[in-house]
Image 1: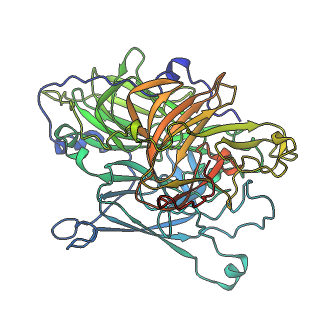
Image 2: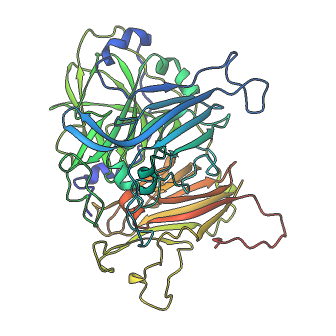
Length: 556
C-alpha cells in the first residue's frame, strides 16, 4: 500500500531539525488584543478542568485533585464537513475531531464513554485481521500515565450491545476511563483515539480522535503567553460515497483518495497579522500518511519556530522551513507574521493545501517577541546509565508480500529482539502465519522499571516512499541517532517516522522505564499495518531483586 507518495529527499533529510537560536524583536503584545485574528478559525470544543479552591493539590496532599469529567458519546453521525459535505462516520460527540481536553499535571481525567454503535458482526478469523469494528477503547497517546486497569489500557474492549440486547431494548453500555496525571507530567500537546486491535484504522479513518493539552510551565513563558494558542488538528479521512469503506482487503484504503481536514474543515483560513506571533499545536491525527508541512506563498515562506515535539518542550526554539509529521506526531510551533499576503500550509505530495494563512490587517507595532530559551520538558538521559550497553533492543518493521491467500496477502511483521515465535520454526518463515505477528498472549519485551536501555528501530522496506511509524506506549524515548549520525541536540519523541529505501531509516534511542507497571504495546502507527499484526506486547515490571534468578518472559 503506497500511502506516502511525493515526499522529497530534501524534506526527508530534515526529519529532525538542527537547532537555530531565534532572534528577538522589541515588545510583547497581550493575548486579548489578538483574539479577533483567530476568531473565525475553527477550533474544537474545549473542555477545561475546573480548579478547586486554592489550586490543584499534589497527589496525596491536603487539598483535592482537580477533576475533568467528560462524556464521550460514540456513534455513527451525519457530520457536516465544510469543503467536503456530509459524511457518516463514527465520532466522539458528533464532531471531527472530538472535544479538546485541557488539564494540568496532578489533575484527574475521568471519561465516561457511551458505545452507541451497532452490534459487531460475527467473526471467527484470526485476530490479525479487521474485526470488532464497533468496539473501541481509549488511548491517551503520548501521555506518561498508567497503562493498566481503567487508565490508558489499550487491552480493554468497550463492546457495543449485542443484537439480542438491541432487540430487548437494553441500554447502551457505558465505560469509564480514569487517568491520574502525575504531578511532574510534562506540559504539552497530546491526543486521544481508540485502540482496539482490528478496528483502529477504520475508526480513525472516520475522524475518531481528539486533542489533550496539559498546561504548565511552557505556557507561562511571557512570549508564549502573549501568543494566540491555536489547535491545528489534522485528520486524514478516507471517505467513499460519504462514508468510510470497510477494511475488507489490503488495498481497501489505498484506493480511496484521502480528505485532509483541519479542525473538521477542508482548507480553513486563519488570519495572522504582520508582526504577530501565534502558537500552533500541530496534531497528526492520521492513520496512514506521513506529512511534511511547510507554510509558503507563490514566492515566499513563513519560518516555523518549533518549541516542542510530541509534547516535550525544547530547550530553545528551532527555526525550520518544514516539519515532518508521521501518524501520531505532534509539534508545537511559533509562527511570526511577515509580509502581507496569502500563504498556505502545504504537505508534500498532497495536491491541495491543508489550510490558508492570510497575513493581513494592521501590523503589530512593535513586533511580538520570540523566546530565546524555554523550560526544557524532560532532562536528557546519560548513556553511562544504560543497563545493557552491548545488547541493544532491536525492532525491525518487515513486510512479506503475497504470502497468504485471500484479500490480505501480505504479512506485516515486527522482527528484531524476541519476535513472536513461528508456528513452524523449521519452515518458510516468510509465509509463517505467526512469526513476528502480534500475539496478545506473548510478551515480546519485559521491561524493568528504573532501567535505561538503548533501542534501534529500522525499516527494511526497499521502497523510499513506503513509511512506517514506530510508537512506544507509556514512556517517551530520547532519539540520539538517525542512520548512524548523532543528533545534536537529541530529541524526545513518542513516535518516529521511518522511511523505506536501500537501506531504510534506522533510529537509535535511549529510554527509561519509569513509574508505571502493566502490559501495553509498541507498534507501527501506520494503523492498517498495526491492525494486520505489526505490533508487539510489552510488560513493564518492578525491578528484579539482585540475585533472585527470576526468569522473565521476553528478555533477550
